[in-house]
Image 1 (tube, rainbow, N blue to C red):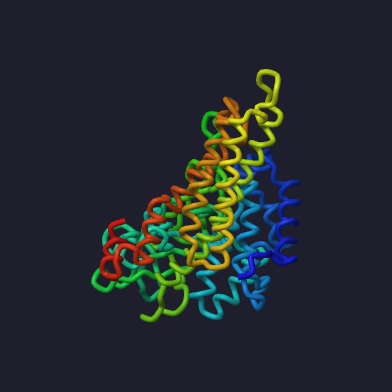
Image 2 (tube, rainbow, N blue to C red):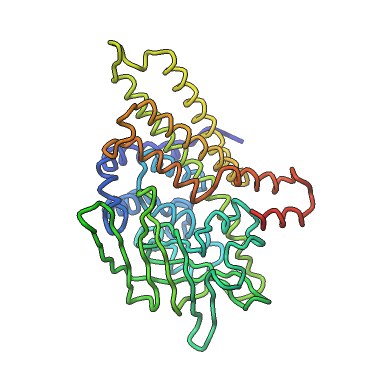
Length: 422
């Protein structure tokens, strides 16, 4: 393994960091999350068309750059450092690999070029807000009841003369309120022969903003005429830079992703996507932790107490040194996972834990101002907590990785039972 980055990889990091430093400061981030889209559309177009960010890991035949997940992880490390709200994670990290793996040639030819140039964003919608379970990060996604198991609840798919129809609801769908395409996990075949498939639901965004009593809370609802029976509601989320939505489907027409054959391994594709996504998410969490640490170091050099900068006190130096070691260890794990996605879940666990610790210490070392809405320190705390809620928790990431490694026994039945339990 060659741990050194290539000149192209270093250039991706440098160019993106410079661009985000100019256009994604704390003020711009706060303004972006209050738009109907939940991000800055102009900046997204620049990232997509100028830098080709959503197409980094897509094949060249579909307009992508043909890079590896390593380049995407490096890019997400920089977006994490700035806490950038963008459709990059939902579109390029979660949705695009599934379309690549499962889509028919015509579906790939139609959708992937539009994803690569940024004109189409996508979101993965799974029932119950169980994204981590669906991606196989916290349990075996073949046995866990994350998708409703064909019983009441979940999302059901029915095939008739007019094609496929979906009925059900998905909560906490990342960027689900603004995505131009939904990838919906639904059950078909009834309970005795139930299996999970992925369906494509194209949308047309018609957003209505409601501001109550002059407060800063906003609700966004999409009553899209382009998708019959589809209602999307933007939810109030802990981390505004991670916009979440509730997706309701009431006899909504959909198109099956891929071919309708018994050999299609949807759960396997979800798990493979989950491991790569975990590596990219780990790099993003490391970027957020590094950003919080950099801001804290800059602050303790300026803040004075008893006539000297608080950063000159040995106790503060020791705390910052411990945080630096944590960040570098998590960064090493994330870079290794980008090279070997099998290590993604463990790297993600370490990165999320590091982000939580560093963000908490940043608030402490900023003193009282770290708790105020006007200061950006609290944004890192919310990002760390929200990511663990969406893609963790940490102890389950590690627990399932241990099960997959056979640390609790080699019996497949035990691993399956453990996955169902968590």
